[in-house]
Image (cartoon, rainbow, N blue to C red):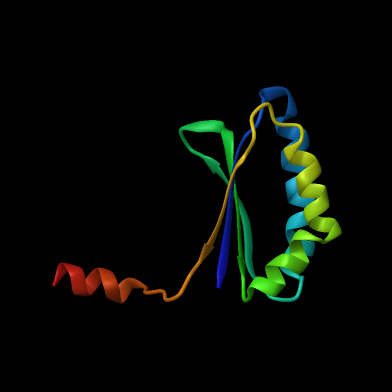
Length: 106
């Protein structure tokens, strides 16, 4: 699995436009082949900070997405930012859930 995280600091005057753009592409991205998840979150301590997160089954799925019109729209929205976004692509080899917490606290 490949996890994509994009941290964007959005100028106040562009916030509504960026949020509308992100909202419009969430559904279409979620329907792309290989998409496991696609969500956007607002930092509760700083509303100008948005986190756009995606999960992809394979590197090929991610690369197809990066060439897609949907990502082109997101890329256009990121051009409205004053500072370059912090973008990370993480390869996830294994995952654990609540059982890891229970085991650690046992």
